[in-house]
Amino acid sequence: MRFTDRTDAGRQLAERLRHLRSERPVVLGLPRGGVPVAFEVAAALGAPLDVILVRKLGVPFHRELGFGAIGEGGVKVVREDIVRMSRVDEDDLAEVERSEEAVLAEQARSFRGGRPRIPLDGRTAVVVDDGIATGSTASAACRVARAQGAARVVLAVPVAPPDAVAVLTAEVDELVCPFTPAVFSAVGEWYRDFSQTADEEVVELLRRNRATVRSGNGDADGNSPDHSIPVEVPVEGGAFTLTGDLALPAGAPGIVVFAHGSGSSRTSPRNRAVAQALNAAGLGTLLFDLLTPQEESDRANVFAIEPLARRLAQVSQWLRRESLPLCYFGASTGAAAALWAAADDSDIAAVVSRGGRPDLAGPQLGRVRAPTLLIVGGRDETVLDLNREAAQQLRCEHRLTVVPGATHLFEEPGALDAVAELARDWFTSHLAPSAPAARAA
Image (cartoon, rainbow, N blue to C red):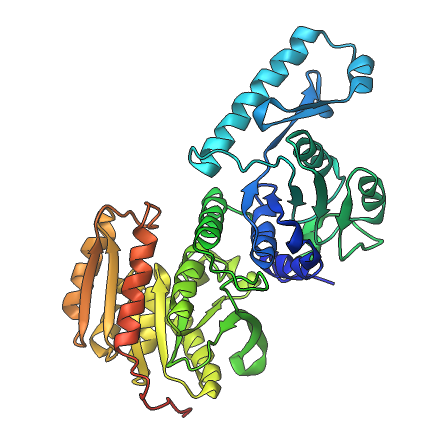
């Protein structure tokens, strides 16, 4: 078994954990890579999501050798046998602890933005990571969760070696691991995409979970509002496929195809947040990776707008089997690819660009016929100037909307929500329920 990415792993893991929903658990992701997995688990359980922050305490002259771990709230787990064996002065050990406490506090501020951690007193804590190699970090996290008051501790990971599972099973109330390969060298080998998780993605996933739990948007079974299904889209004449996530609400008047920008992917928390808002409005969405992992390794491919536009057109042709009008939502360089593809396809119903680089579509801008909305952050001054220049070249119905106070990634409070509302209104106004279905050529 290989997982497509952490989102796929989280969804598969969540299926093994649904029996915990009645326990009203708190899901705790180990940053950074464990958080995207934990997000899917929390969505399935209708549970709040938090990070569990652990810092290993390493012996001063041999930092790889841990004599314990610390967590938030003054929690400390110490291996007395290692302390005795190391024969290290107590003052030196105290200095290690102070140093790691400072790092712990900074991580808490970074990930939570000053909000307190979710209390675990009397709750079931589900500790989630993207996999286990040796198990030392997971063990420390589970001990910290117990020390913070959790009544039950469940450790859940998609993949781990059998020997680590055997050891950790004795340390927790329940261990769930669907895949335990006998030959194991590293967690990443069991993922097709094991790219690094950025701090901003951790922050965004925590925000999305808070919004979902606060609004009660989970259904009676604890499912997330994200009802997308994985799809494999054939391209280049069927020579290979691209991985995507397709959501198609009943009665959808059209499908919005997302074209992500450089350095991003279909797992982008920003694009997924917008997609969920569109799904809530009844629109279908397709998030997919424009390039294969091998192609993405060559940075030149990420900025090759014309080939990206051709790839987007191939995906659109495949998607027309749904007999629904298509729209494009492009971010950064993906916006240029979307506009280039729309210039060659008169059946595209509408285009929205978020923080995009429409200027990279060059002379193709004058050929676009689809109504186009350009959304730019007010503090993204360079990109705003480029969008103003591009708007002057558009000959279709178009609008340039500035989100006040927003920077390029729309990370400010409420900025991404504004983008989602603008995109929703633009697409729905250009996708009348009675609009004729687009047909394959």
